Image (cartoon, rainbow, N blue to C red; front, side):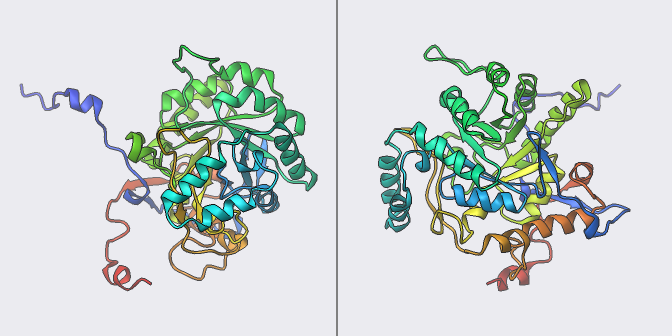
Amino acid sequence: MIDLVPERTATDARLRRAYGFEEVALVPGAVTADPAEVDLATDIGGLRLEIPFLAAAMDAVADVDMAVRLSRHGAVAFINLEGLYTRYEDAGPIIDRVAGAESGQAAAHVLAEAYAAPVRDDLIDALIRRIKAQGAVAAVATTPASAWHHAALAAEAGADLFLVQSQVSSAHHISTSGRVLSLSDLVGALKLPVLVGNTVSGEAAYQLMQQGAAGIFVGVGPGAACTTREVLGIGVPQVSATLEVAAARDRFERETGRHVPIVTDGGMKTGGDIAKAIASGADAVMLGSPFAGAVEAPGRGYNWGMAAPSPTLPRGTRIRIGERLPLEQILFGPAETTHGTQNLAGALRQSMAALGARTIREMHAVEMVIAPSIATEGKSWQLAGRE
């Protein structure tokens, strides 16, 4: 008898195919919905958001003003507690120098010098209180090394969400020096939702949920200003990563009854990318460069990688945002181009309606196909003539 099942090789076990946004497509089913009846609301850390958009904790993207503006639109902006706004009372002159630098290398020197200044507790407290005084959601982010200290400050100042974010997050960190962060201890000590990122592993995400994480951020190196994939060779394409972490989330919910929201972080530029992230299982998306393109963003038309860079390796690069528009137009339109970078909420709403999904949860059940030619099939004239 012939064995028709091919023998599994060591390469098969170690190497699997993974997919990004440009390689998949969403499949319309037998049902469509009225766009007016589509609900984009989601829940993150016990807070209801009217639209599932989070602004990345990057100095060029999120400051107090952007946090207030996005909160009023039903979204959230995370502010980096180890960034420029907690090192300087006025970061404007430094941002002007970064934007005015003649090259990316020159900008990197400016940033390295700026981030060498110490983080100030009084500025953390003032920043959070300024946001809360305007009736907005105060969401803040920090690295694991500073989590305990910053968590106490954030809770005292009245923060609503606390994100512990690093290049790669796991439930078990191997170290023989310094205090290792115990997520379960941190969660138990705080009366504040603790979100964790970033991961691309379902098993790691599941273990973080067991330790009490109120949300998991997915993505290692996909952001336009991030260089992790090039410098360190680390990462998994966002669709596959989100699917895997969402599967772990669903397993955890079946076992415990607790739904832990998943946030796809980075790699999205268009409404179509966002729709694919939600269909992959995300409850919300975190955007960096799309929001850095807002006229109201603090980066003066530029974006750069996260703060606290390694002294020997770059954590990110400065990029120029080509199109600057009002934040409201980016979110709600009207769209004046066909690039898919404007009216992001409207595009997601229309996509969900066409797919028959009236809620974020229903969008998780939409069929997806592997479609590497989805962006180019029949589009030769359109691509050649695009301005």
